[in-house]
Image (cartoon, rainbow, N blue to C red; front, top):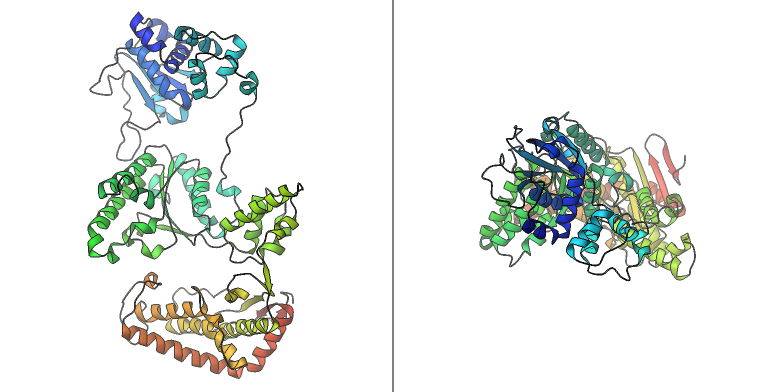
Length: 628
């Protein structure tokens, strides 16, 4: 170690305030150790604040080489090493390859935490030293050698307490006259911390998986399980606005990992968007994630990567290369301990099946619209619990199609309303900014009730459900489809392997609403169709799956996967004809059964008109208002 620097090296070092400050800090910490005093060969392990670690490296090289840094043809001769920050070399398992040896010279290892240092290196180190950030005296000395205006001790102490980049900037500033001491001495605001998943409401269906991966990561950190036992390849599936990006961010926080966010669109937009640019941007994202000690690589808009099975010929070369490279990078990344890859999509069926297979993004987490209680809890969360979730239910129970993103927007508007009137946030502020509620005519409510009871009676007749709850609305949000005026909920019996009889019964349940309208009123409304997810949409898709995927139609054949039956699916004419026949046959059977039950249908519908909600329990009977 070179304790004394020649004039040229000292001049060069002192012209760089960050390097000079850390040279002072290193000298102060190492002075008094046998390694420093005796210039003895061996290993010095230094723990440095992460914000200063690269400046410490530059200073350490000056100490070790006298400023005459040169190339080293192997790591055994390099005098300074940095641990845990962008590893210089990885093994096949992705951990940093540090070979413990007895050096013939002095060597310094720098790390931001002792936890990042392998136990073998900790035991081999001759001395372990904590390097404190530069002090006020170091700031004063740095300004003196820089030849700028001197500062007094109180100001230097205030400067030394600032974040690293502020210390460096203020140290290098020519004059500090007029600098407001109050600005430097006031407490530094802690950065806003984004929440963990445990702190967020909602995501009810995903909670069991979240708890499982938390335990897996904890076990991995304790070396109880290998990284290969962790669910580390995940696909988030859900409609827009359901909080997939927030889920990935909060999961990273929950696990104590860094988040590396990107999207297929960002890769495609890199530079000129040529194939080489796209592949380079993709590789950079993966490299960024795998270089960290723990990271969640979040890839949004994953469906934009495409599916080789449906690519047009003129796009197949580009798309094939992109998907092939993505598969290679994903496989490699998931082998690196501490790297989790999460993709997000609204359209799972548009992603190449090789990406979703076991060993890649194998775990599929469905992020749906929040349930009744979850909606209230999400809104209360955005109000920082200033309004209780139980008090918000009267509002959120009427917003059944609202997304978490919409709830956040609603919360901002309500808080703005309270600020405008210069008052404390109240329920009235929330009600004031809600979309207009339009009362439904009694004739429409009656038809909706008949429609929902039709579904309920067919569900009971199917033998697939024992308890059914029904609720209808008196008012609708302006612009909301009338198809959402009623809601029927029942839990299907556990069917591991449904038969053709079971699937046809489900089709009859879906057709029960429109059939009931025809039985009672002699005509049908648009309530069974018109939107994706409607009764007719679900019945039609199930019929196509039945004959084209499950092989339960006239012909024993497989034409497509069940997830391919979507808005882009174009069936063959004979398949369309068979589906039309199934729907017509099941509709006739549904109408025939409901005609026999017309009196029962009309009585239950009348009860629902009065009470607006109904519970049908096969074992108890029918109750109104959800009470026995």
